[in-house]
Amino acid sequence: MPPSGTILMTDPTDSASGPRKGPSRAHVWCRNAASRSGAWTLKQAILRVGGILVVWAVIWTLVFFFIGTQCGVSGVEFSPDRFAHRKFRYLQLPVLEVQITPRFTDEFHTPLEKYLHAHGYVPPTDRERWHFICGSAPGVRGWRGPARWLCHGLRCWGNESDKWITWSQDHPECARLLWPRVVALARREEYYSAHVLLKRFFYFDGTPAQFREEVQTLKKVYPELDFDLDTQPSPSATPAAEE
Image 1 (spheres, rainbow, N blue to C red):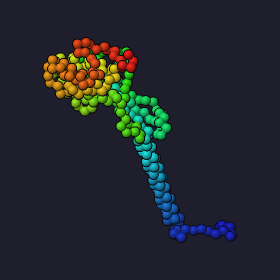
Image 2 (image 1 turned 60 degrees about the vertical axis):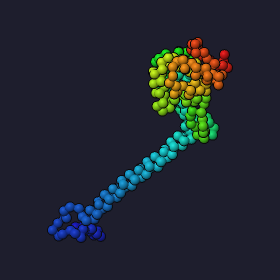
Image 3 (image 1 turned 90 degrees about the vertical axis):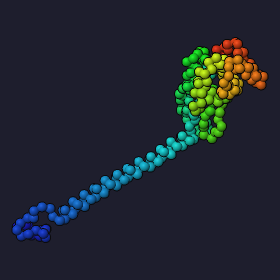
Image 4 (image 1 turned 30 degrees about the vertical axis):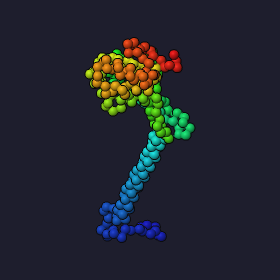
């Protein structure tokens, strides 16, 4: 017998035959509620983490977009000594124009440049100058350098440089007259003169004698073309200002 004053708590579902087997309805409800609460908490956590990741993805996308459009500087250069091109890129602070990353470069040769090197038209030299052709920078339009004239003449962009290779193969005697003079003019940094010479003979389809006549006619219009076709140009040609 329990002591007097003690209140006995009984489950109304209990039968007189003895203790109830298994959990009560209250226990089942509590357990189901706890299970639903745990599942909802996990779902909330997943949604929260997913939302955070989306926000950071948007932020980094905007950061990279800003860096690419407002900080990125890139361009192409030409070396008259190596007779090669190279790309460059770096980052700089907008407005202040302060470079904040190293300058990365990547040298390459066009098919025509490879052809000229392979056939001995580019004599070796100890110098290594790089001159600006064109580029892009935030807030800058028409960013070009004098070396672009040579690239126009060589038809560096697109597939037209291959036409020069075909022309040289079809006119070997004229090629032996043309290319050493083009290289010499480039090493003297007379890029526009080289452009004039190349532009005149891009569609030329004559004999070596006619080539010489055309050169003499061209020199009357452009006196800066002061080379002699009978004299081999110096491999270490320098700009007139340095002579």
